[in-house]
Length: 330
Ligand code: SF4
Image 1 (cartoon, rainbow, N blue to C red):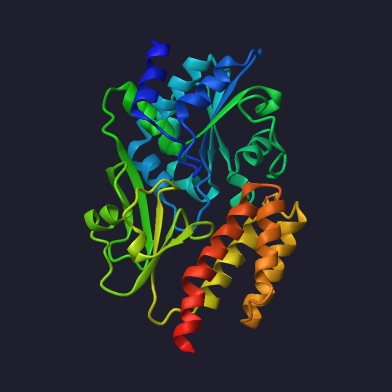
Image 2: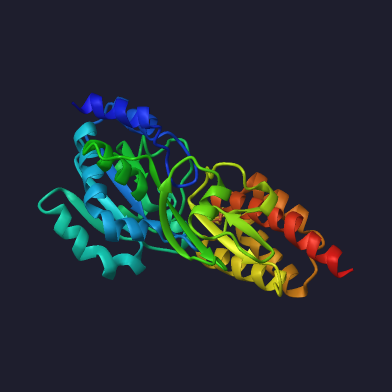
C-alpha cells in the first residue's frame, strides 16, 4: 500500500515547491533508505518570500489534504513524529484549524523563528531543536542527519497537499500561484501545473495593459522576466510579482528588496552580510559602480542559497531593467 503511494507520487511528477524543483518521491526514498532508530517529518510552512501567500491559502482552505499528506509520510517512513513549522504571522489564523485537523496524531505545530532565512531547511531544523535559525553546512543533508541527528523529511505545504490529494485519488495536477505587485487581479490562483507564465497571466486576468516586467519566484530572490520571455513553464516557486514600468523608481525598489534581505538574513557569513550592506550603500548613492564584484563574491562564496540567489536576483534586475531605464533617460 505504502509502496503504491510512492509510485503514484513519482508517476504524477510531484516536485518540491521551495524553488529547488527536487522530485518529492526521491526525497522520500532517500529518507526511507537510511537505517536509523528514529525518523522525522517536517512540513515547512515558513513561507518567507515577498509576495508569497499560497501556503497560507492552502492551509486555510485545504488543510485536510496537507495533514493527510503528512500522515502518509509518517506512515511511509515509520517516523516518530511530524512537525508543522509555521510562519509566526500565520499562527493566529490557522493554528486552531490545523489542531482540529490533526486531532490526536503525533504532529506538533512549531512557530517559525527569525526572518526570511528561518525557512531554510537546515535553519528550521535548528529552531525545532530549540536553537537559533542559522543554516548549517550540507552535506550531511537533512534526509541523512536532520532533527537531533536523525533522518528527516522536509517538504513544503504544497507538496504535502499534493500527496494528500493523491492518497484520496483526487489529485488533478493543480498548482497554486501567488500573483501580486501591480497585478490587475491580485491573489492566489489555482490552475493546472505545467502551463506557461503567459498562460498563467491570461487565465487569471493578469495581462497588464501597461508596460511591465515580472519577478518570478518571489519579490526578494526572484528572477526578472520581460513580456517577450513568458512562453515557458514556471518552474520556480509559484510567485509572480508584476511591476509597472511607468513612474518606477528603480533605486527605491532595489532598496526595498535589499532592506528585506538585510532584515531576513542571519549575518553568519561575510559575503552575504557585507555584500548586501555595500550594495545598499551603492543604492543610496544611486551609483552601482563596482556592484558586479559584490554580486560575483556573493554568488561564489555565500554560505547558503540566500546569498547566492539574492545576488542572481539583483543582477537580473540590473541587466534587464535598470540598464534599460538609464539608456532611456540618457
Ligand atoms: S548567505 Fe550567509 S549570511 Fe546570508 S543567510 Fe546564508 S548563511 Fe546567513
